[in-house]
Image: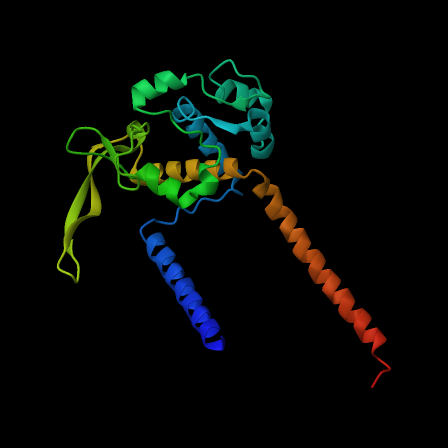
Length: 248
């Protein structure tokens, strides 16, 4: 019985280390975005880009305009004049007017709601995805992060048109495969590479915020909780020292 328990513990440890290794190797393929949801200016820019380029197809139905305005330091007038392009009201959720049957006939399927994409995929994945679009040999859009995606590159005027360059790698078993190497710019966009990188980072930060708006308050409350615990620990130490002062 003891040997069986030891073997199970050994297998569990091996699985733990292998899962950590796999997750680490997968994360190396995606560049860290540097998205920061505490940067209000970045969130405001991300909201601007998202409303102008993404909200026509992708809703974020878990977010309301008035909640976004409150969290991002925007007035009702600023939101309604610059970020609302339909007949929505200030307290409405961010829905799209495109009908699902039209979306399916145009794109092959209905564009997903992006309310939780930042929470499920993470800002780094969104950042890499927005920068991974390229024109393939068929003349259509493709993506290195999500190959054969049906979504067109709606930000191509900003980024420009690029092509993906692949290289051949041969493994230890002798099997060769084509892997992505780098991008080559075919037609530049209105933004430089660094400017578009910042745009992708801002959109990623905004979608991370949308996925969990309470994270802004939660991080702020967490600081006060840590300070309270530190103060409580100090007071408990003083109380303990007072009680045990005359006890040897």
